[in-house]
Length: 148
Image 1: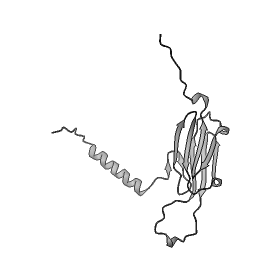
Image 2: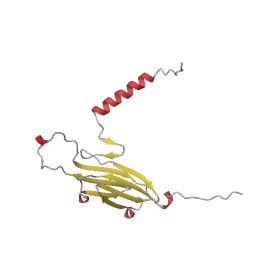
Image 3: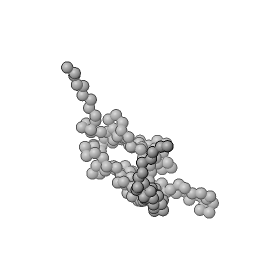
Image 4: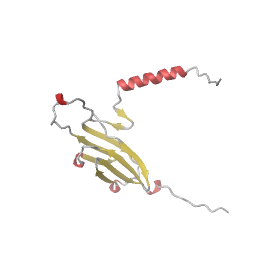
């Protein structure tokens, strides 16, 4: 027979998790982290560290690059745009309609020492790639230590 540690508040924690899930499903949040949403959707992003830079990949399917704007102001990189809904199909013809349309807005705080003129962006196959070079002091430095 295995011994199981008794946790007197385990049931309460489980109940609290269930209630939190119930409310988050019923009332989805419109503000997540530092982002503010203006429209009904926001593109998903991946942010990762690359040798000498930070890269942001944003999925923007069905959006022309002319409808996307990237700005840097006071160390905040802002990604804005709009995905327009096609009116070719009338509402009553749809069996299911899951895609979201409208304006989007994402904001990312940059380190203070970033040079905005050095940021590069490319758009291919519905994916926007923004490459932000790291300032010199943020790049990891390798120091060899001699052992005596």
